[in-house]
Length: 229
Image (cartoon, rainbow, N blue to C red; front, side):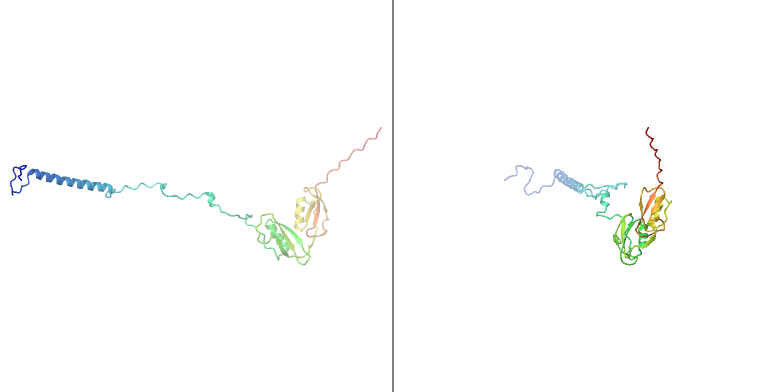
């Protein structure tokens, strides 16, 4: 077999690298270097540019930002703050005072000071003390509620005050203060023109006194009929 394709090559002699081969080797080395540089640059870009400085933080504003992806707590409404359940409403925490064992007149004064009404029920025993009340002590009540007092003994005697010429309203107040109650024969305005029983009479607690108030209506005389002809 002959080397007809390579006429200049001699057998047993090693070829020396020529200038063209040297240029080829240098060009291939430069290409490999460029590929390595490009690959490193692409990896730096894909890695998110870790060596770059972070962007400066945004200036703080008066309104905090809201992350749309994160759940936010809803602001409580006014209805959420309202307590649930039923509450007992009383006038300034008003309750029935403890009156059992006290004198009934003292118990009546305490009820009057609290703007409460009273009703006395006298018994057949002895003494002036209150045995029980309705509503019971400590019960929440509103102003104007009537509290019934059960007294151990009978109703004591009292003297009826003289109410003539007083205004009808003042006469009623005096009767209540004395333990009596007014009744009205006519209207409730004007001066007292009559009372029953009379002033100075003896009565008992809870007895009524009838008052006649206002001026008596004037009597208009009627004309006598003319004689027939």
